[in-house]
Image (tube, rainbow over all chains, first blue to last red; front, side, top):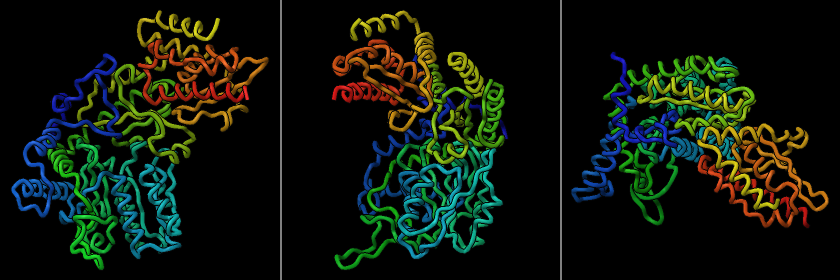
Length: 407
Length: 137
């Protein structure tokens, strides 16, 4: 496997050549969203220029082309994830939407009852916390949280002891967006299964950085957003095990999701359509499949290895700075979170912005995790295939300058 | 010096700076020099909501003149408040309420601020005026 050359990729991403405040953009906010290559931009444009039409049921040529493109995208995504069949792939507007769909469908099913428990982890994004809190409140279910060790990893021994016949669902992130912790999702899902609980893996931060094989992970649901993996915003995926998708009631009513409607009685369509009420984001689905093709052409393992080298180098460079605290384990993926004693992350972010750097500051939608570490937020650098060693070095120098100004 | 004269003085001071580094260094130095607020005063009712960093504001009216005390965990935010405090301290509540705080646009600082922070400045100005209104009633 040859090393990935990020300089060969950068011309694919038009935004990377722009300047910010008169300085070259250094984009290190990829955990929030990734930039888009021409291949993806062209796929969106080509859809609207050549075959835009509403899908399914259309007899005319354009409708058939659009339907074929949309359903081909489903197949590409199913193959990418190693799902058993394309019908296990539901198009959503993103990770948050996908989690809310599962919460809504489970909440209407007879799988949950008062006294049951849902387990999440202390690393979760608000989008994998609040939908479950809302469901628990509605149904009288208890939300339990896997504790986080000081190094930002999960206490899986405690997790094992939390599982019981009361556990209905375990919902955990594959990779923490705040700290870059890679969770042992194989263990988490297999233990859940042993206790008869369902498992949901939030893959928002793993899809851009790792080879995902759902048969290896062994989860019942896997969700992610297209925009984290070089695709547009507004498109995401809910993978669900086919028998579960058949069993659960639909989360929303409308067109597409029905088999037959009368005013007296309506019957529902089969998965995936049962979960896709209304006209979907057709262009988004096609662009997402194009983005995954783009990733596979480069090779996800090469991307993964390249990002790993960058994040190791960044951790090394930043840990040499005075007064720094690095969060998360040394073996991170995607994101590196850090802070400096006596310096507000927002001040550093503001000064870095003046130097052309895009980093994220704040709680990263993980307020309970920040509270666990007694901080209000961190500065987070997060990486993609197109980032370079040179950018990591520039970040180190920019941080030194900002720290000099603030101290 | 009245409020608009003080504002003009500040605008001229900031015009002396050549680039963003100098301008920010100046704001940071103002933030560092603004006296810290006693921790006992950093309570929820003095917190200005809507800022990414925490900002506390305490106001008093002594002999018909407003006196402001402010603090923030972000030194840049604190420097920005210091600009406002310098302009509004010692003025009558009526003058504070009437003051045009858009002078900050003429300092060239706003263009260097993220929209969330620029918004926090607007909130801060509104809050300082609100305290003046309370002092009058």
